[in-house]
Image 1 (cartoon, rainbow, N blue to C red):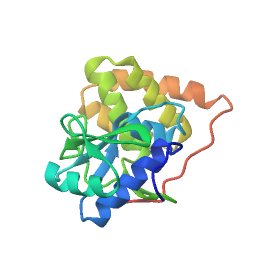
Image 2: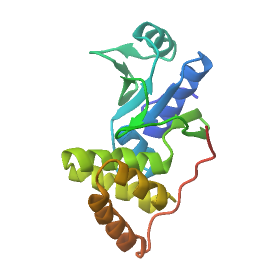
Image 3: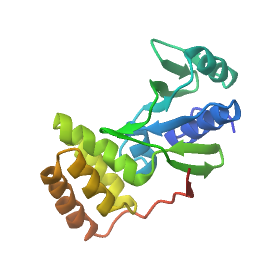
Amino acid sequence: MAITRRSTVREVAAHVSQALTDAGITAVLTGGSAVSVYSANRYRSYDIDFVTGASLRELGRVMAEIGFTRGAGRHFEHPYTRFVVEFVAWPVTVGDELVRKWARIRTPAGSLQILTPTQCVKDRLAAFFHWRDSQGLEQALLVGRSHRVSMTELARWSDAEGHAEDFAEFRRRLQSIRRKPGLPAGRVTRVR
Protein backbone atom coordinates (compact mmCIF):
# COMPACT_ATOMS: atom_id res chain seq x y z
CA MET A 1 0.00 0.00 0.00
CA ALA A 2 1.47 3.34 -1.05
CA ILE A 3 1.35 6.52 1.00
CA THR A 4 -1.24 8.95 -0.34
CA ARG A 5 -2.57 12.38 0.63
CA ARG A 6 -5.40 10.58 2.46
CA SER A 7 -3.18 8.22 4.48
CA THR A 8 -3.78 8.25 8.24
CA VAL A 9 -1.07 8.35 10.90
CA ARG A 10 -1.65 4.63 11.47
CA GLU A 11 -1.25 3.85 7.75
CA VAL A 12 1.89 5.96 7.33
CA ALA A 13 3.44 4.55 10.52
CA ALA A 14 2.62 0.96 9.49
CA HIS A 15 4.03 1.52 6.00
CA VAL A 16 7.30 2.86 7.46
CA SER A 17 7.44 0.15 10.14
CA GLN A 18 6.97 -2.63 7.59
CA ALA A 19 9.64 -1.20 5.26
CA LEU A 20 12.10 -0.97 8.15
CA THR A 21 11.27 -4.48 9.34
CA ASP A 22 11.74 -5.82 5.81
CA ALA A 23 15.21 -4.20 5.81
CA GLY A 24 16.08 -5.87 9.13
CA ILE A 25 15.69 -2.67 11.18
CA THR A 26 13.80 -2.66 14.47
CA ALA A 27 11.90 0.57 15.13
CA VAL A 28 9.15 1.04 17.72
CA LEU A 29 6.43 3.69 17.48
CA THR A 30 6.19 5.86 20.61
CA GLY A 31 5.05 9.29 21.73
CA GLY A 32 2.03 11.21 20.54
CA SER A 33 1.76 9.18 17.35
CA ALA A 34 1.20 6.02 19.42
CA VAL A 35 -1.55 7.93 21.26
CA SER A 36 -3.06 8.87 17.87
CA VAL A 37 -3.12 5.20 16.86
CA TYR A 38 -4.61 4.01 20.16
CA SER A 39 -7.16 6.82 20.41
CA ALA A 40 -8.37 6.46 16.80
CA ASN A 41 -7.11 10.02 16.17
CA ARG A 42 -8.98 11.59 19.09
CA TYR A 43 -5.54 12.99 19.75
CA ARG A 44 -3.76 14.06 16.57
CA SER A 45 -0.02 14.05 16.19
CA TYR A 46 1.71 14.92 12.95
CA ASP A 47 5.10 13.72 14.22
CA ILE A 48 5.57 9.98 13.85
CA ASP A 49 8.23 9.05 16.40
CA PHE A 50 10.12 5.77 16.10
CA VAL A 51 12.85 4.63 18.48
CA THR A 52 15.60 2.72 16.68
CA GLY A 53 19.26 1.83 16.91
CA ALA A 54 19.75 2.08 13.13
CA SER A 55 22.12 4.65 11.68
CA LEU A 56 20.88 7.63 9.67
CA ARG A 57 22.55 6.10 6.61
CA GLU A 58 20.56 2.87 7.00
CA LEU A 59 17.36 4.76 7.72
CA GLY A 60 17.89 7.15 4.82
CA ARG A 61 18.27 4.29 2.36
CA VAL A 62 15.04 2.58 3.45
CA MET A 63 13.09 5.82 3.74
CA ALA A 64 14.18 6.88 0.23
CA GLU A 65 12.88 3.57 -1.13
CA ILE A 66 9.38 4.46 0.11
CA GLY A 67 9.47 8.07 -1.05
CA PHE A 68 10.77 10.00 1.97
CA THR A 69 13.53 12.59 1.90
CA ARG A 70 15.63 13.65 4.83
CA GLY A 71 14.82 17.02 6.38
CA ALA A 72 16.51 18.59 9.38
CA GLY A 73 18.20 16.30 11.89
CA ARG A 74 16.58 12.88 12.10
CA HIS A 75 13.34 13.97 10.35
CA PHE A 76 12.00 12.53 7.11
CA GLU A 77 9.26 14.01 4.93
CA HIS A 78 7.08 12.58 2.16
CA PRO A 79 5.51 14.70 -0.59
CA TYR A 80 2.07 13.13 -0.16
CA THR A 81 1.61 13.49 3.59
CA ARG A 82 1.96 16.16 6.24
CA PHE A 83 3.18 13.57 8.74
CA VAL A 84 6.87 13.90 9.54
CA VAL A 85 8.76 10.77 10.61
CA GLU A 86 11.40 11.26 13.29
CA PHE A 87 13.84 8.67 14.57
CA VAL A 88 14.89 8.78 18.22
CA ALA A 89 17.97 6.96 19.49
CA TRP A 90 17.69 3.50 21.04
CA PRO A 91 16.83 2.16 23.64
CA VAL A 92 13.07 2.28 24.07
CA THR A 93 12.23 3.60 27.55
CA VAL A 94 9.16 4.76 29.43
CA GLY A 95 10.33 7.07 32.17
CA ASP A 96 13.34 5.32 33.69
CA GLU A 97 12.21 1.84 32.64
CA LEU A 98 13.72 -0.05 29.71
CA VAL A 99 11.16 -1.58 27.32
CA ARG A 100 12.14 -5.05 26.09
CA LYS A 101 8.85 -6.19 24.50
CA TRP A 102 6.21 -4.22 22.63
CA ALA A 103 3.13 -4.75 20.48
CA ARG A 104 2.77 -5.54 16.82
CA ILE A 105 -0.42 -4.43 15.09
CA ARG A 106 -1.22 -5.91 11.69
CA THR A 107 -2.78 -3.45 9.24
CA PRO A 108 -3.42 -3.42 5.48
CA ALA A 109 -0.43 -1.04 5.20
CA GLY A 110 1.88 -3.47 7.03
CA SER A 111 2.85 -4.60 10.49
CA LEU A 112 3.33 -1.79 12.99
CA GLN A 113 5.72 -2.20 15.92
CA ILE A 114 4.37 0.03 18.69
CA LEU A 115 4.35 0.40 22.47
CA THR A 116 1.55 -1.61 24.09
CA PRO A 117 -1.38 0.43 25.41
CA THR A 118 -0.02 0.09 28.98
CA GLN A 119 3.44 1.21 27.84
CA CYS A 120 1.90 4.10 25.90
CA VAL A 121 0.10 5.23 29.06
CA LYS A 122 3.42 5.02 30.96
CA ASP A 123 5.11 7.09 28.25
CA ARG A 124 2.48 9.83 28.49
CA LEU A 125 2.35 9.70 32.29
CA ALA A 126 6.14 10.14 32.37
CA ALA A 127 5.66 13.56 30.77
CA PHE A 128 3.00 14.38 33.35
CA PHE A 129 5.04 13.07 36.28
CA HIS A 130 8.40 14.59 35.41
CA TRP A 131 7.48 17.80 33.57
CA ARG A 132 3.93 18.45 34.89
CA ASP A 133 2.72 18.20 31.29
CA SER A 134 -1.07 18.18 31.64
CA GLN A 135 -1.41 17.21 27.97
CA GLY A 136 0.53 14.02 28.80
CA LEU A 137 -2.09 13.18 31.43
CA GLU A 138 -4.94 13.82 28.97
CA GLN A 139 -3.27 11.58 26.38
CA ALA A 140 -2.77 8.81 28.94
CA LEU A 141 -6.47 9.05 29.80
CA LEU A 142 -7.46 8.78 26.11
CA VAL A 143 -5.48 5.55 25.74
CA GLY A 144 -6.66 4.17 29.09
CA ARG A 145 -10.27 4.87 28.19
CA SER A 146 -9.98 3.18 24.78
CA HIS A 147 -7.95 0.12 25.77
CA ARG A 148 -7.44 -2.30 28.57
CA VAL A 149 -4.36 -1.31 30.50
CA SER A 150 -2.82 -3.01 33.51
CA MET A 151 -3.55 -0.81 36.51
CA THR A 152 -1.37 -3.09 38.66
CA GLU A 153 1.57 -2.60 36.31
CA LEU A 154 0.94 1.14 36.04
CA ALA A 155 0.83 1.43 39.86
CA ARG A 156 4.09 -0.53 40.21
CA TRP A 157 5.81 1.59 37.56
CA SER A 158 4.49 4.87 39.00
CA ASP A 159 5.79 3.93 42.42
CA ALA A 160 9.22 3.09 40.94
CA GLU A 161 9.20 6.49 39.20
CA GLY A 162 8.46 8.13 42.58
CA HIS A 163 4.99 9.32 41.56
CA ALA A 164 2.46 7.11 43.35
CA GLU A 165 0.40 10.17 44.34
CA ASP A 166 0.24 11.45 40.76
CA PHE A 167 -0.81 7.97 39.64
CA ALA A 168 -3.71 8.16 42.10
CA GLU A 169 -4.96 11.22 40.19
CA PHE A 170 -4.73 9.33 36.89
CA ARG A 171 -6.58 6.33 38.38
CA ARG A 172 -9.34 8.50 39.83
CA ARG A 173 -9.86 10.39 36.57
CA LEU A 174 -9.76 7.21 34.47
CA GLN A 175 -12.37 5.50 36.68
CA SER A 176 -14.58 8.56 36.35
CA ILE A 177 -14.47 8.68 32.54
CA ARG A 178 -14.78 4.91 32.14
CA ARG A 179 -18.20 5.11 33.79
CA LYS A 180 -19.42 7.24 30.89
CA PRO A 181 -20.48 5.63 27.61
CA GLY A 182 -17.87 6.12 25.00
CA LEU A 183 -15.03 4.89 22.98
CA PRO A 184 -14.83 1.41 21.53
CA ALA A 185 -11.95 -0.72 22.72
CA GLY A 186 -8.99 -1.05 20.40
CA ARG A 187 -7.18 -4.22 19.54
CA VAL A 188 -3.57 -5.25 19.82
CA THR A 189 -2.81 -8.55 18.17
CA ARG A 190 0.30 -9.61 20.01
CA VAL A 191 3.17 -8.46 22.13
CA ARG A 192 6.64 -8.96 20.73
